[in-house]
Image (cartoon, rainbow, N blue to C red; front, side, top):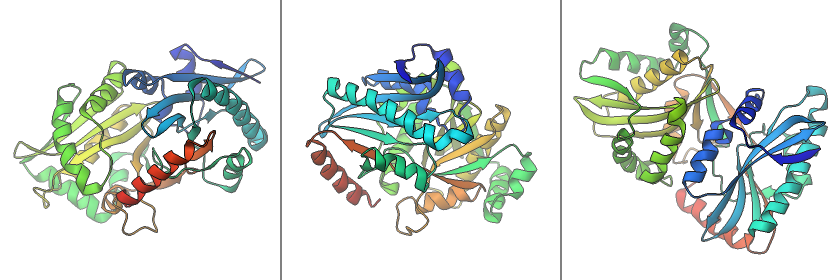
Length: 345
């Protein structure tokens, strides 16, 4: 097997079409977004007998707590089922050889992987056998809620929790409730105003306005993103940023106000986002992260109940993994442990 950088968008995106498990965090445009944020990236491909069998977007993260290489929701692997586990280990081992070389050149103290691999014994052992340890803090969802939207609208409504279905219909009947769809970059600022009021309520680390604008701008040229604005009496009280990529819709950013708690604008907004995904030919609607089922005090518990009300199923991935490369890693480990505790995660 050989490792080389992939320079062409068409090759990268076409390969990912053949991968079953994937998110936009490995898309070409996510790499472009990272570059606008000043991050160095590598798009690596693993070839076996001239056939591309795996890809991995690698991002160099430079922070006060240390420098590390990060692979979000990767690597992606295309392989036959009969040789899956053996070849998966071999492919990942080959990728790791290249990552160690890059880490040495970039003076990174560790390598972090947020795998898009199912959380099972075999996949966990691959990381253990290669010297990885569980990271103190995850950076992207390890537990997500998904909905198959290939059914018709009536079937989707019937698959929802009774209360969710009722609230959607109530919002549709209310003449003061409206949902606007927009691709205007200026509307990111409107989203951000509401987003900042949501941060403290759900105890998550907020993204900056620059981050939100650059992310939106990276996916906009390919018509892969949209902003939803939910209003009551023309006042913005709910909003969301959706990403549409390779027939999957991602509810990536959300914001809401508690000003009118009895007006179910958020429910109708989510339903309109699902319908837009269907119109775009998406087969899966990814609600993004949810709280663990055994954690009643988790800050995302209320949000999780909201997402599950639309029907669907959960996906659990192997927890974020770290490969320490120097003693500097342990400073980062300690800082992230403290952050996790403060956030109540």
